[in-house]
Image 1 (cartoon, rainbow over the protein chains, first blue to last red):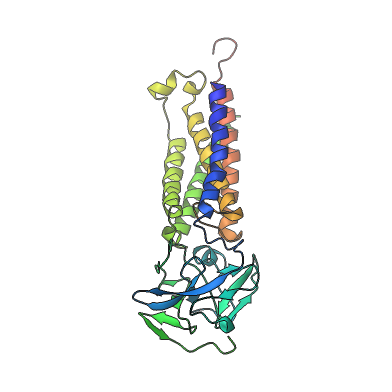
Image 2 (cartoon, one colour; image 1 turned 120 degrees about the vertical axis):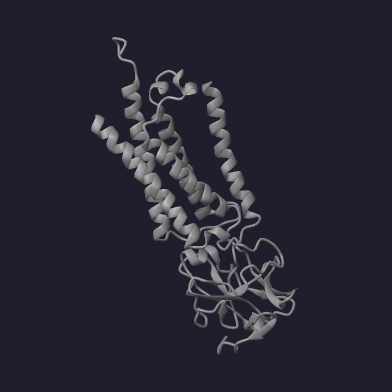
Length: 165
Length: 147
């Protein structure tokens, strides 16, 4: 009997890391992102928007100051910063000249496009998901980003480019 | 010894309610409800914490199936306390995995106040519940004269 319980306990300890590793396949993985790529994708009804190398939607936070993230703690858990290890690259319609990075208090550097720090949204689980679009959370709105670095509202880019971005 | 047993028991109850409250706050106020799988697990956590806390606080009588088990059958609260300790330990393990790597695709970001509070409540619950279970088992163990 004791042996059976020991086996179950051992199985549980094996299963937990397996589940964790399996989860990594879908994770935003902001701590070990590798060298990031920012691309564009056509996502109806919004049109061309910025996505990462795996096609995952990138967002800007209206409360952020230029080249400065104001999303930390619980905010960063729900809206994980898009990060990079090494110089990020542009692909598709994204402009290399608009891409920079900023340091964060924890983890790798965060991607910035036209002065806007970029984020993922936890509820997005696949390519083309835009569940975070136009949501108001943690005190301000979140929008997908156009290739020109503007927030996209209902398929229309708005707002001026951030100076110095 | 009886007083200490009661203190540990009701401290465990309060800590379980505290664990449930922290998870409910994060689910509602910090938008954890939007996270696939993790949001559902937070609801389960709140329900489990409340049910276990109420069971531990209630004057539980030995159910028929449990009554026949030696020692434990005389102290059904031990089973609840052990189950609650495993529950709290599981919550700690899940949180630490999400901090270090990812759990069901979710990565927790940093040790903010809410996270530290959750770890403290869960750690204290494990200690209090295991302490209570140990004292309750000692009380329930038949004495040499057949008591």
